[in-house]
Image 1: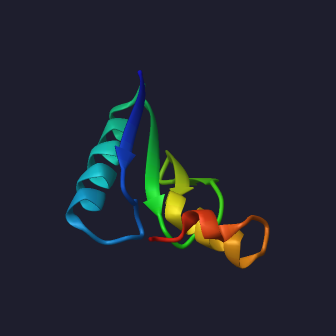
Image 2 (image 1 turned 30 degrees about the vertical axis):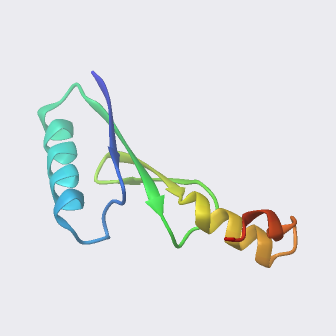
Amino acid sequence: MRILMISPTYYPHIGGVEYVVKSVAERLVKMGGHEITVLAGGEPEIEGPREEEINSVRVIRWPTWSQVVLTTCLKGEMHCKNFSRR
């Protein structure tokens, strides 16, 4: 079975949600017959999406939207005045 798990962050980040998602994902892989993908959709320290495999679990890390906008603005690739608070 193909299973997608969604978490704000994933290992090596430390936290309750990260621990539970990692534990469940790895146990399902060990049971056999399962292809597990974790989408970590709140990774603030990366600039763009990246993919890796940790203990036979496919992990797709996605940056937070605000971090992408900030990084892009700092690089001068877009007009940032549209994103400022009023």
